Image 1: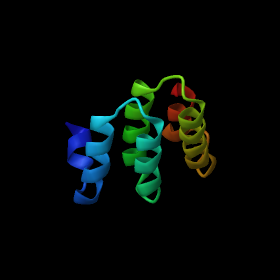
Image 2 (image 1 turned 90 degrees about the horizontal axis):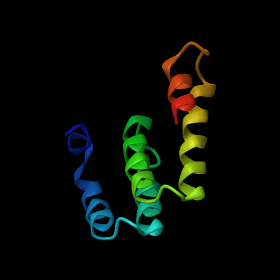
Image 3 (image 1 turned 180 degrees about the horizontal axis):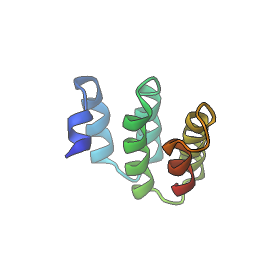
Length: 88
């Protein structure tokens, strides 16, 4: 339900694409590229959906962990961003 609330009208073509072909890496990378300026919370939802469909994708894991690390780098160690990075 939360993910559905975060989908904007600009996301609809990408959502349709990943729903049509969820096991195609290119669909997910295009979507993530289109929302690269979105808040991390929104990108995390998309990354996690992509990783459920393609759990062995090094490219997705690397991009996701890099985004989480960048967010954690900017805050103190006690911040929840570090916990999210460790949990991933």
